[in-house]
Each structure stands twice: as C-alpha cells, then as structure tokens.
Image 1 (cartoon, rainbow, N blue to C red):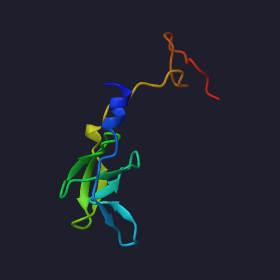
Image 2: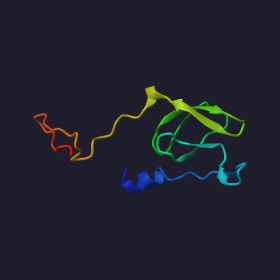
Image 3: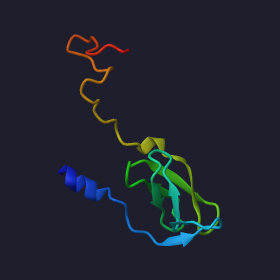
Image 4: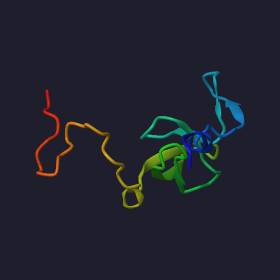
Length: 103
C-alpha cells in the first residue's frame, strides 16, 4: 500500500455535527481517542470501538444515550510495535552495542 493510499485510508470520516451545551459543534456520538487525540465517531450503543487513526481498541460506556465515553484500552488487542526509526538512540548494532550515544 502506497503512502497516498494509507493517507486516504486514514482520512477523517464524515460525521453529522451536533451543537453541544456550551455552543460549539462536535461530531455526533463521538469522543477523543486517548492515544492520538483525534475525535472518533462511535456507533450507537457500541461497547467496544477501535480508533481508525491509530488502531487503538477501547471499551466504551455511554454517559447519556447520545454521548460515549472511553472506559479504557483493551490491552490484549493492541497492535504490535513498529520498527525503530533508523539511527534511534536505542538501536543496537550486530555486536549489541548502541549505534548512537545518548546525550
């Protein structure tokens, strides 16, 4: 998958906007991801949801029939770690020695 295709796949989905009690607009049935801070829409009455931006799975509760809240991450379903960026200070060479010294 090319970078353009990945960017399109993770682009923000369209959501119906609703007025909050304080007078600003937010997507209906939405909350912020605790990991990446993007606003995500949650299907009505869902008990679990996954952030479409960072793939973090969550347990969901509903504080009102219209407003979801993230209860916590589902730690057993986390995506695996990605590779270290090249030259990262924790990267080791073939002999097990750090390739870069920490400052």
